[in-house]
Image 1: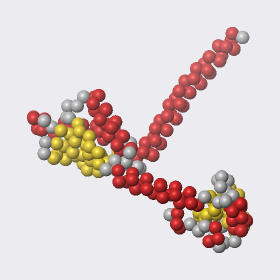
Image 2: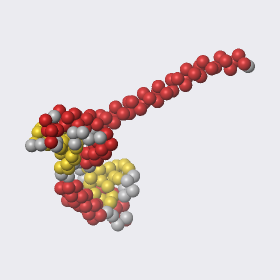
Image 3: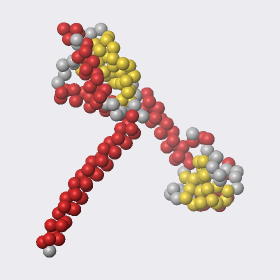
Image 4: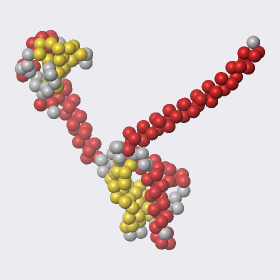
Length: 209
């Protein structure tokens, strides 16, 4: 928190590791010299890593720093308050186009940090075939396995079937790693035929010469 930092004369140690106002490492120096430099720039010397040996201090505008930190905390609280439960409704016999459109919206909600209540709406005799709704939910899970986790498994609620998905922060890095591996493998597989072709065509060019 901004108020937890020691500033200027409150920094009592003799030596510090200094970062200047442009973010450059200035190495170890005396606190007196660092404070003198900060004063010459009309800025403050702020201790940002008190447990380091020696402590790390940075030259900055401490008033602006506190204001920026307060704004970040305010924005973080606002985002937390705005994160809620979204709902997306599907029909058991939904077409491929509508399914993809709705599922992309579910993906968008999840990446924004929202939970999503997925509702399958049955009409008339459709309610006698809950397995149709379960198939839709399974397809959604399969599509979003990289970013979502099931927080509430599928269950019937009157004429509807409901499932709740939540963002899975652990799944995304794993998915990215898998995609990187697949991409790397594709590059290798594309390069190998080119190398083989070059080695086959090389003798022909030698015979012509």
